[in-house]
Image: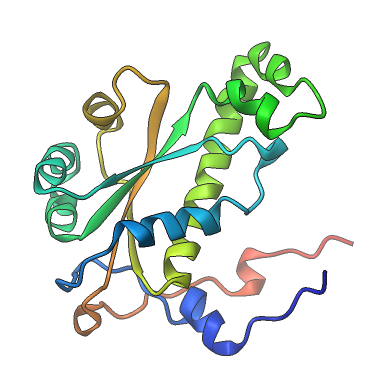
Length: 198
């Protein structure tokens, strides 16, 4: 399969002109769009195809109020006013899915025998999937507002009780009010952040 380079408009949408949004318009996000985000992000790579991310889409006023009680003060209005806030969780019992997702070897036994490997894989790869989530949301025309200011234990108790899922981070999505976006903050240069090792 030949891989085509994205045009500049697509690169702007995904990266160079995309901003974190904290103020939202009233335009709703549909359940179909939530499904579309997942159907895109699921194809991106994870270690041994583990796919540990689990997503709770917080939509109703009641659910928003419950999540708002778990976040830091600066994030309360962001959660209450966004059309949707996604909790990107990590399933610590993801190895049980490995026979389905990685059927050519017994990966489930590998993870079951190593608690640290399981925890590291769940965190690292659900974080990756969270980044794919943001790219997928932007790709279908939505704006994103990722946040890490929340009490994970409270979120787990409020939304994941009785499961092995734990919160990783949260991300509001919708149609941002672009008139109220703050100026872009600086980024590190290639030279400051990268090294080419020969």
